[in-house]
Length: 160
Image (tube, rainbow, N blue to C red; front, side, top):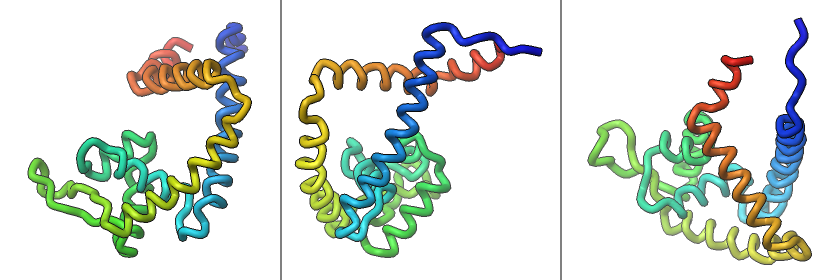
């Protein structure tokens, strides 16, 4: 049985997805190199950022969901960073077992140091790219994330 051919939009989105996969790999490699001197990896930096930029302390499951990652992987990184003194777990008044993840002073300093390295790097990377194009790309990626999170991907696979 032959599958249906891509629509023009489906073909274009497939190309975009493949480009995003390549970009993700390159961003992780560049991030690893950028923060290696801080004894961080891209994964640890990403977790630090999720904690630092959250409006309030969150449990691991919420952090993982907001990052689009699985809870077990984020839990492993959090356990390692807790053992190294970069963050701590605090009691959660709403859930006895799901502790809240909070940066320690050392964790805040590590995130600030990574940010100081990131700013000139990202400014150079963005140099020459039109702001309008970046804004449009961000909007499209955000919309795709929203659609995936709302379960439209499950509906599409059921129709196919």
